[in-house]
Length: 326
Image 1 (cartoon, rainbow, N blue to C red):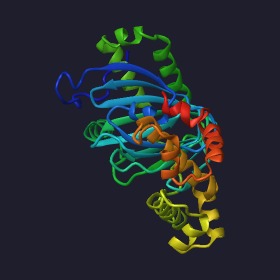
Image 2: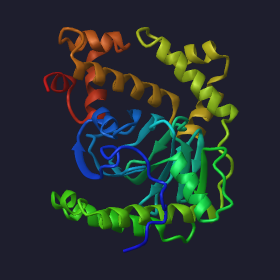
Image 3: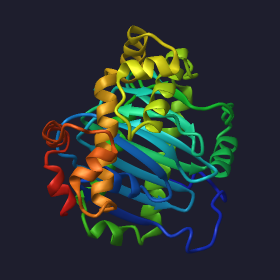
């Protein structure tokens, strides 16, 4: 077993320091988002098909490490626990994603403050390890290790290049998952918990020697996308067109198309339709409008009901009436 590289950095009550392993599977994107303990996340599904996701969560005092797998293109926004630094490590080498409107083509680790997470768009097959570490514990570790890195401006991406980090962390969590229900019993042993925690931390320390990707500052294209989305969300109950959005925010159709394609890899018509369909699904699951699919669909601007049903089934793999009666 490895020695504890953090010395006396851990803090908090014994209950807060309790370690555990939790595995959750779900077929709903909102449940999947809410299953990430201590985070406040919102997901929107952009690709067609029935959603499947699973989480494997390991917790240890000042560290939370979650393997997140899903099978649909999603946009993700939100926050992690206050006072944490988050690391998102791809566990498959082919992974690419959009971050704050930037296309990240090379396998990269995204580092961000927990209370200032950038919007990301993940591909259809996603396998990522998300690690949240208390900022004070990370600062202590960097100091003990003599690292010159300082926690300042995030978000930042670090290119993995030839690093074996993804493969080794994937094998670590494959092992945890293979133990099934017995995994929790294994984690009753402090030496095992410490070894897992320090293995993850050791890999994360290595990323600060990797090359950084270009800055992830918001671009003018990204701002256009945000304005278009804000306009759409504020007019959801009205029959508006792409031309209405262009006029409302003062851009041409060509520019709007270009901005969406560059920032999210999707055209604005498909994106805004997906936004509305996701909103309908949430309302049907909440059964907030007297159980009427027609009322909910109309509220979110769908006037051609048979076309709406076809689009809904293509997006989520079931009819809206099936969602309503879950």
